[in-house]
Image 1 (cartoon, rainbow, N blue to C red):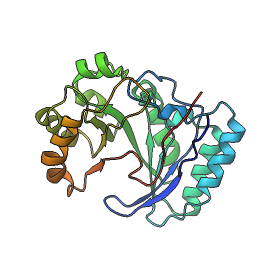
Image 2 (image 1 turned 90 degrees about the horizontal axis):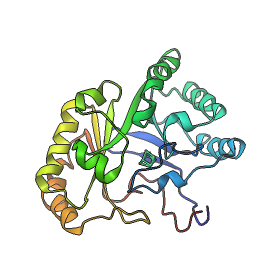
Image 3 (image 1 turned 30 degrees about the vertical axis):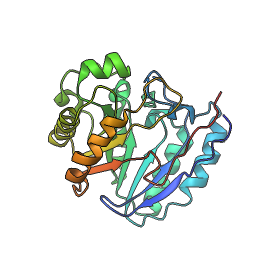
Length: 244
Ligand code: SF4
């Protein structure tokens, strides 16, 4: 991959204050979502990944006793040395809660992972990208790879959800329904507004305008809703300009 030198550490001070690190793993094993290019931030070289991750984890101070770990995939894609270092940093910096990402296909690994951290007195919050609760749209258009029908079935495993809004075919009503469904079944909802990349799914400016005018004002003060109008809004990430 070339020209990808993203910011990988930030402190989020508003809403659920936490530190966030964007680590690198072996990469998402699904890789089929038709809107996603962030799985390109990956490498099969575990040693190189660990070195890069170590550099970021060294920056964690524990200022808010909460840490969010993202890695353009699922926690299962991180190498074992990185996972051990996360545990060590949490203990040293008295971090009591860690948020990790996980795709639906790895849901079976979550309970053991929660237990592993719970044994150290650390609570895990597991976030998954649902994108929308409209299953037909999600699976036929986005190819998300979640075969669950109902939000309750997803909430059995996950604490938090990401939604992807601003897509062709969505409406003010459908976006509001997704946010309300997320709030009813999950602790927190993270709204990502679609941004153009090299993948086939494109943002719809009219849908984004409807969100900005009607829904952004309605939810921006909601402490359980994060809204990322740009995917670097948390202070981490960047644009992949050329990947191979
Ligand atoms: S599961 Fe996540 S990382 Fe993998 S292709 Fe889909 S959106 Fe991208």
